[in-house]
Length: 253
Length: 266
Image 1: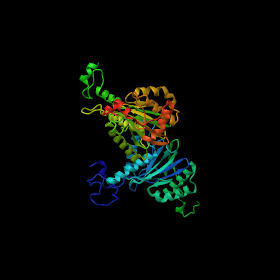
Image 2: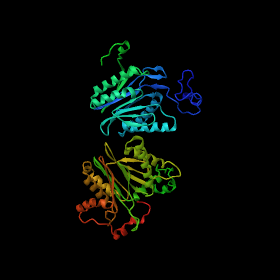
Image 3: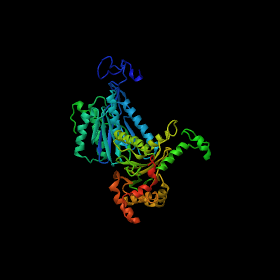
Image 4: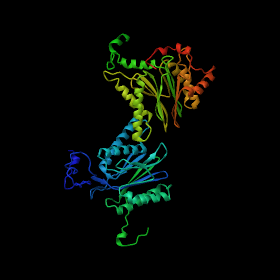
């Protein structure tokens, strides 16, 4: 049995599937994953005229426990691609390790070809689909954001844990799919050619609203801004949460 | 030096006292037995021009240019039977790359993969190296590229190159005109290729629409192979410059070409 098969029974979160003997990670005779353990919360992203803005908080939960409160969940792969995901953060970091190794190989080759967002998005979709088919999925809904050099345009895509990959101007993972996506879609429809600052504001607003509604979230967040030149990750942004609604005070929007 | 060759050339894993692998060199000699292929490129287009051989008057001329994907293909010289093997391998690599990455495979990656494979075969007992050299032409969003590969496993990035029988004459032509290639228009580029190829012809042979293949790829143009009637206009332009009229191959010419006796290499 591998180490990751055997968390201590009293602190391990219950299997999401059932309480059966075989599905309990301690006794499972297969090595297949049963559910996510150390999880990240939502990810939100929006495309603007000259790039993409992606936001995620810095919390990694262990079931209901807010276990790691200052963790990077946004990963820059190269100057044209950045990604983040909800769900099992160990799985995400495993994928990022593979992508970083490939990026290092590309740099060592030095022939000017490296995987851009389109290739990474496609590759992740194939890997996730393959794992789901084997019955040992990687528990992540991944957001891939970047700049497509071949077509000179911003690139924003989403891959679900089942390997469904698509491109869209607004993309979210986790609870944000229900709360944040409509919010950001409206912002995009009103102004599809928004500029960078407008995109950053809408992401920050979205994260603030999310933080107040989603349990496993935090107001300490990171933002990644991608444009045609580089990926810029802004760390340690603290969102201002307005809890006046809890004091029965009217909030003006 | 020559008298030691016989003792050290039985298999590819034996060095000669002079530090040579004779089997690898013999494999490179096989490339020289094949008919000539010429490759050249400008800033925007790459062109491959190949001389096809036919075994006898009953046979079709042997295929020399293989398309690997929308954006890349190669021409080969050497052992005819080895070419489709390499073609299938590279074609699968292209398709796998497209499946995983939703993008065309960069030519440098393909060439490096192939050359690693070729090198392995020079270091393994019981096998032999590939008997073909390739001129691989590809295009991507950054530009066009031309690579030469060799049975030894070496890859060369080229501005222009010719390999195969009597290819030195073609290389001489290309060296003389190398300065004109970078900014050449596509029709001019093809004419340069044809003129270089013409220099490799044996006495009394001619370029005809049956023994010439042309392939063109560009930044905005997918890899396209021209054979038969579709090379007529290019050959006509070539003839117009040098005088005379284009002709289809006659039996007199076929009887004269010594390569028709050689079965293996094309």
